[in-house]
Image (cartoon, rainbow, N blue to C red; front, side, top):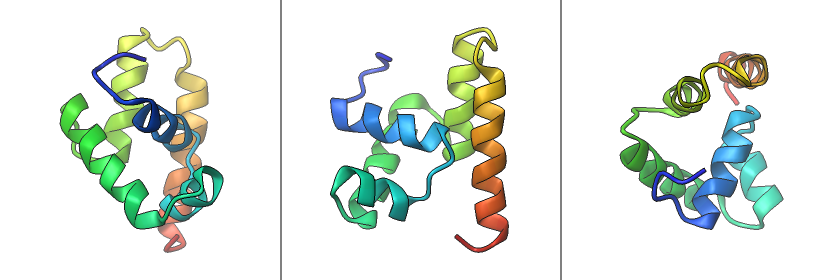
Length: 86
């Protein structure tokens, strides 16, 4: 993945791109949701994006849209969760 991300940050990005919430990522990784959010802050800064949606588009743009369908599915899941207050 590169971008100067740590292994833990890369793992968080993987789950973000699948539309997982901070709570779900924390459970998967065995860390608190607050720690996930702290990783997200570092990821956003390193990638030059403002939020989770920026993470999706950052990697879609870098790959020329190659996995855009997967990213859009994750984005739709995330936005569905946001709409429900997750």
